[in-house]
Image 1 (cartoon, rainbow, N blue to C red):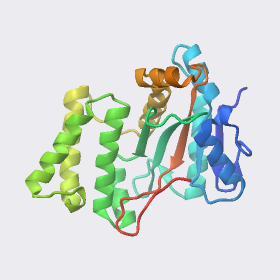
Image 2 (image 1 turned 120 degrees about the vertical axis):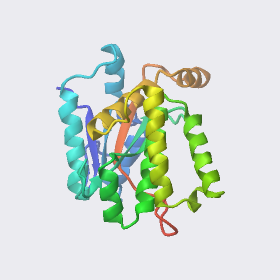
Image 3 (image 1 turned 30 degrees about the vertical axis):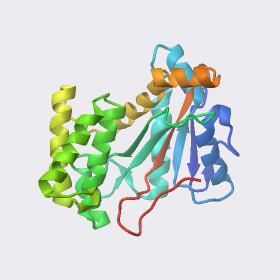
Image 4 (image 1 turned 180 degrees about the horizontal axis):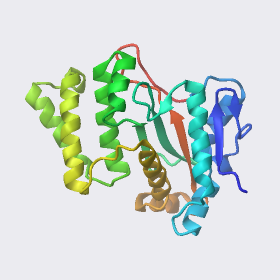
Length: 259
């Protein structure tokens, strides 16, 4: 059976030194950094081969991928000590694309995946920072609605600006936990109105929605134009990288970056 999921971090690097053709540039480099002992936040990569097969099979997945992805999540849980969907101390993940060559701005990212109406309360408690938790949840709803649900990003930005005007605030950082909580309620109303269904609360539904959006982004118009302009073959496909979240919005001592 073809292996489609490669884990990294926590002393594990299934992809060895990293194969860009198989794992994409991002996945290969994450695996390579894990291989030399750098403290890479744990995660897993769904290969470019899966992307190619996804389109060959009429935008469907083989049944075996379910178990492989579940194994990838279990790996992240084991390393972080957190559980995906846990109400008390939830594991949150990022979902990013990663083609074998860099395609800046062409592919999609979802952050803070795993938040819902219950896990946001757990995140607030375990972090000791309710503002951080509700800010993360509104960011997730906004990003997921844009990238996965295909809703108008501008309507969420407009709701944010109205919230700041009502508060008399100029910067996002001036808003408090209660302000973000109120904005989350507004965002959920927007999703219901624009999508016709409530925002997904099941964390596994959220995850598979994001995976599908990354693979779907490979055939988006902007990606096709970029490939044509840069002579990138359309059959290369993109990988999907799922990785434990690190946060840049926890205050003055919090920052994120890439290597």
